[in-house]
Image 1 (cartoon, rainbow, N blue to C red):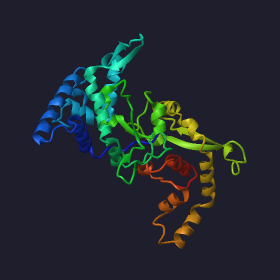
Image 2: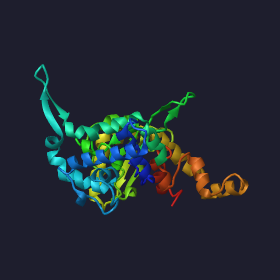
Image 3: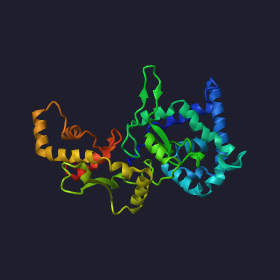
Length: 333
């Protein structure tokens, strides 16, 4: 899992929520603002049943309770989640019986205004723009798949990235449009996670995500010729037990452990390249091609075919695996 960056344009996101709430039914600016304000107040009154201004830091002082919830930090969302999680079913859902006598849960009417607002935003392609605004290109859950959106010649865009609700929308509709409950992910991760409540969010900046390392272990001496003789391992900082337990639960529930076991050929390539392109060889290449490479870091990225800086790990799949192995092999510090 890769840590998500802080979103830099929260005002843009709030405007997307506003557009979805108005839904294009009004053109006059004063009318739009009046309707938006009224609806924010109506939703805020419902929210007062479970949260208050005390659940948020003293920012957005002029905002309604609903707007504070929309832009609340992940840490604030987590505190609210812990407060309501045991009573979530009772708070947000009703049990109904269909004509065949089957029972099912449905979202209570008063919470649908938030729950359905997310669908309205997606219908306006906000999910495509959200990924572009973040500037991420691959999935933060698995770091295996691209999430780049596609656009045809007719201008129509298709979202390859899906948006996961870290706290599932069906159980916690109150977080349906909270910015830091939304995680741009690949279709595989979104499908596997589904409505699971996993432990650690990529928006959780409490943890140091560098405390998880992806490593390898040769199972036999023929690893040079046989990539199946390589085992991929996940290692943790021994002093961060809480992070380790949470991340292990994440990787297991998302199936990431098993999927990474298929990348032994990629690891084998890195191990071979590391032997060929040591420090002296790279120095010679830099001297021979002074106009081609700006630095040793750029040369390493080109040789190993991936980004290695912390703030660039969401640009290309398997970047975390590459970075950690290059650290272990002494190619980078």
